[in-house]
Length: 333
Image (cartoon, helix red, strand yellow):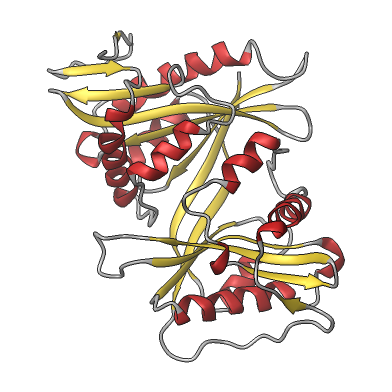
């Protein structure tokens, strides 16, 4: 059955424009194409596949694919995709994340406003039934600096910029830096029974990071079953029976770029008792060497510009350079 059309009061006057909900698995190829075109316009190296979308829709955490998504068509062709999901912070506040994707040729024509307002309204509906009584509910979005029309729309709606993030990369050509492991620490292959302790170690390490949110069992199961999960790419450090730190790595394929696939350091973490000993650098350098051994030419990662552990300085010293800037905006409901 075709998804029912939606009427959005902020819709611009574009012939053939239609808004609708998610209609089922048949939408996956078009959604992936829209996300990839939107990402490419903003220098985002990540590419989505039908398999990756199917996994996300099959394991939704704090969002409802049938009610929380918005699809935008012009003359029957999908040009935009948006959705909202909510997360409860350790402080008890609820963040309602607003995710927008729009192909570049349709940006700046008023669709950003229409899509955003619809997702805001849906997030308000969700907020009425989630979180602890008296919780503070906040709209939040992460916007690439290259998407000027969306930035202008958010500022006009009273969203202040609250945080800055960078995507960074470095070539794997030539000699790579060296970094010895601290005494008593060893890197071990990841076994299936290591999944839970590694997961719990990442949670502990990131708990003091900005806007970090307590996950639940649904998050763990979604992470465990992710099609991008490849433990053979991980570099995990142990101190006897304790996970001291790790680099949770993956590969971002980019068939549209001459650079090809990028080795991506998705999470680099060191637990508090093992910080300030050079372990973070050793894990990062170990990841670079692993990527190069796999035949990859480029490594990349994302960093909070104001990370309390000094991650940005570490990445710069290891040769990473910024190529993409994102800004976090939020506003209380």
